[in-house]
Image 1 (cartoon, rainbow, N blue to C red):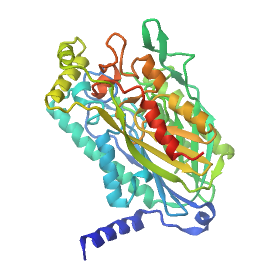
Image 2 (image 1 turned 180 degrees about the vertical axis):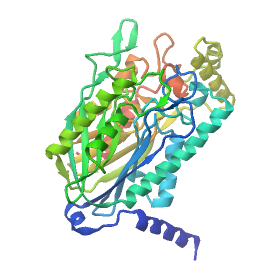
Image 3 (image 1 turned 180 degrees about the horizontal axis):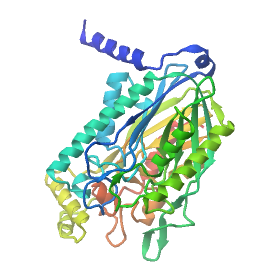
Image 4 (image 1 turned 120 degrees about the horizontal axis):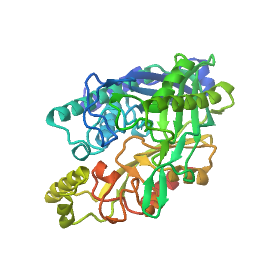
Amino acid sequence: MTDRIAGSLIVATAIWISGCATTGLGAARSGFEAGAAAVKITPSKLLWQNGYGSRKHPAEGTAMDLWARAIALRDRNGRRSVIVCIETLGVPPTMNNSIRRKARAKFGLRDAELMLAATHTHAAPALPERPSLEVFLDPDAEQTQLINEHAAWLEDRVIEVIGKALSDCGPARLAFGHSRATFARNRRLITPAGVKMTDNPDGAVDHDLLVLIARRPDGGVKAIVYGYACHCTTIGGDYYLYHGDYAGVASEELEKRYPGAVPVFVTGCGADANPSPRGRVEMTVPHGQELAQAVARVVDDKTAREITAAPRQTYQRIELAFEKPPTREQWEKLTTNKTVFVARHAKLHLKLLDRNRVPRTLSYPIQTWQFGRELTMVALAGEVVVDYTLRLKKEYGAETMWVIGFANEVPCYIPSKRVLEEGGYEAGWRPERGRTIADSSMVYYGWPAPLATDTEERIFRVLHRVLVK
């Protein structure tokens, strides 16, 4: 037997075992099968948490278990669509690629068929690469090893939950609807002194809550995908316990309300929105309950529109350019900056400069699932600001457009042209330092400079090419 034939048989066997085989008349009528699963991802060890640079030491315990939850769909053509929600700050680019390689080898999943979504909780363990461990945390050798070991273990848990969801597939009907939650607040206040990170009651925000329901033939709820555009930052940087923040609370509430159903949360383009109020762990409860109640309104009133069209799927990478990077003289000057993150960042880039490895572009994945004219899902990597959702809804219709941020991988913030012009934390630059030196968020992510002003247009050129109106 040749290697090629043997490899094909291995993949075919994996697909046969885990590939949502069509069963029953219900699937034939609806055109879909669905499976769902959840796997606990709370680490047994106390690791540094990610998201806040103000933390002084690793986690102290667990207040709420962390989970990876997945839904797997199979349409009438045998094409599969798998969404995995991971309760973590974000999936690093290398981890995204590694998970895809493993899912392709084990289940035959194409890149376009697999969507990873991070809840962006700031109370989960740190992961390697982005944000930059060297800049953001600078952990000692023992913690670095623990973080790397946790990342490898987490990859295996993601593959596990994908396999369980695929194996669970059975006849299902899909329905899509909208609701509303109002605790998200724009956090970019334009002042004479620059952009201040605080509640801006007049700033752009998206309160739309989107819900996709998978029901069994008997009408019971098998899985719920729901999305809201808001940072998962109710909990502050003085909190040292693992916790899923408001998204984790909402999913627990939905599990209680619909026993046996798997809730899969996907964060929208809420990079410039925070929960309000925020700062204490107790505040996660009303936010999570509001979200769960809004989802329940769609599930219980049964007015959601049925999805019958098989999805048209795309996944591709483009290059996003950075502004011109600083000179060696500028980097050397910054190594003595009183802000420790800025000094670490400058030292990192002097090393990269010595090796001629200063990055000029960022590899950026864009994914789309288009269920005919019934539903369009656009998955954008990174911490994406709300302007992308608002523009896509305007150009393609608000009723059927679902934009997911923090998707597949999180390399950095993805500002719009407007935000890049205004500057501030999400833009990655400040007027006093200039456009060619990374600042704020781009320091933590370890990049040399802010993204170029054509970032939004580069992304939309792809979307205009692949989306069908």
